[in-house]
Length: 71
Length: 448
Ligand code: SF4
Ligand code: SF4
Image (cartoon, rainbow over all chains, first blue to last red; front, side):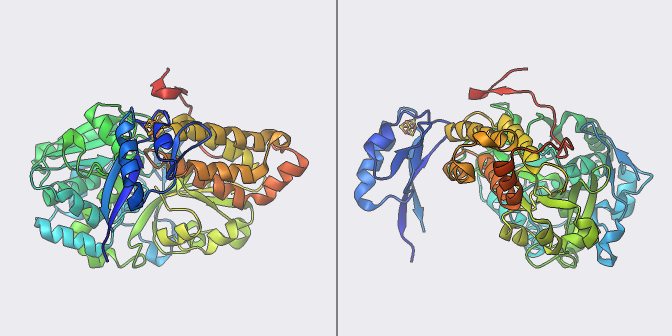
């Protein structure tokens, strides 16, 4: 069965490790020892999509993107 | 035997290597015998004839049926790749014949470009007509340009190709041949460094924002033969999943590295023509180059040369590099040198890669030369690998961790000996080829 999946991806070239994203979406993002975000759950559950969208919009480097995939 | 100059060492083209046995008749290298260094257009046409005029649909079908996969390193199905480039209806695609060959232990692209340029250019022509391309670009290091230029001029005089071929110099970097890095070089924007392609790869948005097929030169040479002889012929050799032959650059077995053409599917012992006794003088075999993986000698000998088997062993055929490491060499110092080199070649663009590889380089150097100061042992190195994987814009960091993980596994006895008895005093080596490197400064700026 096909279902819509919302994924969060980070452009590691653009990202310079501000950490705004981890602040806004700690459920899915944590910061590694060097200060760069690790996307723990690429597949964002429905109840977190609002937070994920806010995180993407707040990234000062526009490095975070929400992508829709049909699986 | 004709020596082919390059990278400061002699690389010999193999004679049809007797270890290959009766199924091992060379295909690509058939035209390259001892007396000839470059097969000119006359000889090329005499041997292979002209390319048949095939329609786009029939070429794509033939490629699908052939099961040909990319020999640049990724082993991606070629038919699928071409179809995805063709998907755009509003823009005509660009074909990039990629011979950047940044991998220091590989010499097969060089051999093809210098020795059999017309086979490569034929493959690019087939791609251009199948995909309706408006540009064909050959992307090669400076040293390869003269040979390819005179081949292109020969074809021009003969009026052989409908799309003219451009030549673009690839920088001397490990990552120069990475798909998006090649496109960046050609677009003259951040040359030699990968881009984050995210959801849109160069197949949709590449050279001049056009759909772009970046295909390794060996793959194109196989295409040139499939266009002439068909997929059934191609599949006469190899296995269902890994059909045909592959060019391998073999280091460590003979006094100089050699390039051989091997039928896929044959056990490596036969491919290399090694007796069990001879195999005993090596401690491990590196398959797939510096982004590939080490395989224990005993397993490697019985392993069939297929991409599937390689992946089961945590490796890949990659660009066809086979390196054998003699037992008396300190494997960990070899590994450390390679990791340092790979770290120096990272494009300095992504935080996890820049920091992660620097840390890994430090740990591997400590393990090799000052093991008593290694904190956390190998489990810490492995945890470090976990943290790096999948987090770069390109696969470079993943290749480095594959190399490191496999080394820790295959050389585990030697690791234990370093940790318990200290570093080796062995002064033999270095064995694995590493070019002299211009150090790069973090943040991607280059110093000379
Ligand atoms: S907010 Fe943006 S720039 Fe900052 S760490 Fe997150 S992804 Fe990177
Ligand atoms: S992952 Fe490393 S090598 Fe790849 S683009 Fe990023 S910094 Fe460069």
